[in-house]
Image (cartoon, rainbow, N blue to C red; front, top):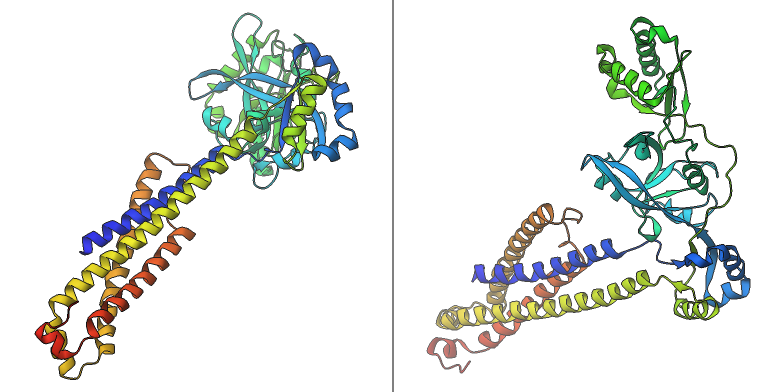
Length: 484
């Protein structure tokens, strides 16, 4: 009987755990902090009309009518980054975000920002990246740079470290990195763009943190190598350090320049490999990362050819009407997939909760019925003993008190064991299959309600069952004259 009751309770708590864990998993996969920011895709032949569309949609009458606040434009652009997981380059989708775009408040909000900062100004060329990008490409979560692919003069690519200014959980539009229009213009200005390393003459290193003692020691080691070892000494090297604030983590940039500048990037790379082979460099290698001080353009340049308009809604009640209005006006389509996913999630949540409640009611009924049959069969078997006890002066209240205590201990211990077993099962499933989830899904309001409902139903069942037996006289119980 103890095993049967524990099994019923394990099934009850597992149903609640699965329901709550399933909802949490769906919520994690489908929740989007940018659900109210909908995108309007601009066809290629209408890209030149973006500013006209923006001006038209920014009218106060339309904002009030369809409940939106801001209309901004952006460009989607994919780049290749070095993927340490596959030891090769992989392409990821990104998008531009203006320095003063209100959506940055959502991106850098406390619920979405892991660490870092926003753009310093419109000339910031650092990237905001998602946690997923770093995980997929096997970068550490506190990485200060991500290595972008830039073509070499002959063949292959350079690994160009681009500073990371922030790491976030998500970015709008399923993008995995965000950049300013300034970065986009600089990156796409042709062969003479600042990220082209084919003729980069210097060697530069990033030192994270601001410990002056450590910086002085590392700079001294590099200066000693340059002054005492060939072929560096022949090229008249000069070592200097300066503050570096382009990444999310403040640090120091150590620059090594040469009076006899290398003629090509291949020679610079050859010098760097020789530096890496020195014993002194190996001792400080863990504190250094090779980077570059890019000669960025002094003006932001022309606006990119924006291919999407972003609309930030204050309420989604009029989104469907806005979609129809925009299509009738300009034959532009609003990206509605996120909104549909949200509606589907609500429907699935309702069905899951309903099923959990039904299972909970069935489970409470099963426990009550089980306790009723167990106690009634037991009392029926010993009704002669109960009659004898009553004949010798034991009151119904005393007998009920004894059996109520026995059943309480019986149920409470079963509940404790069932909760322990469910926790172990939940822990095993989460650690093996769903590591993103919390392992304490059984600790929720539904479990508490289930325990209270079971205990109350058991109390009521014990009272009704004992009353139906003990209401008879001692003689009826001893001689079996009761019909119940």
